[in-house]
Length: 139
Image (tube, rainbow, N blue to C red; front, side, top):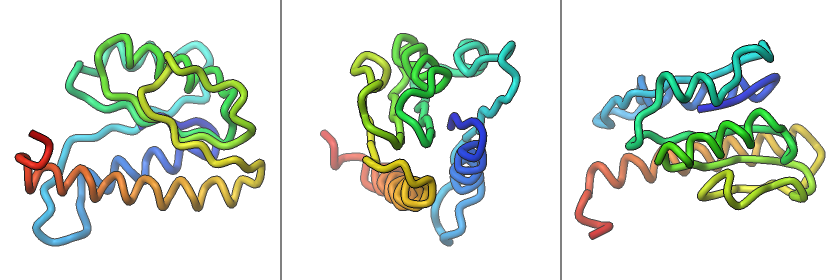
């Protein structure tokens, strides 16, 4: 989970929900929130050290032109990770090569963006657990 500024809290929220599921019977899964306000330590640098090809990189940003998140997702994708971007803004800066999937909220209102992202990442959390409970669904 990648997020900076206010969106770091969303990255932390999702990571905690994977590690400590609130629904009885759901399995705990490893997750880390990579957050940084230090320009010397980029998300891409952190991913190169911590990520493995079977991991998922989920990036959050209120803006589609957050260079740090877009670059990190591009790096994660080049490493073989499944990449998802949850962005807000106009959608002009999104690059297809940076993430396999983008969920774009066409708004500049941070509250609308955050609430939509929150709904999306809870749906993603549920889908991951459905997959693990019914692994044959995708074959």
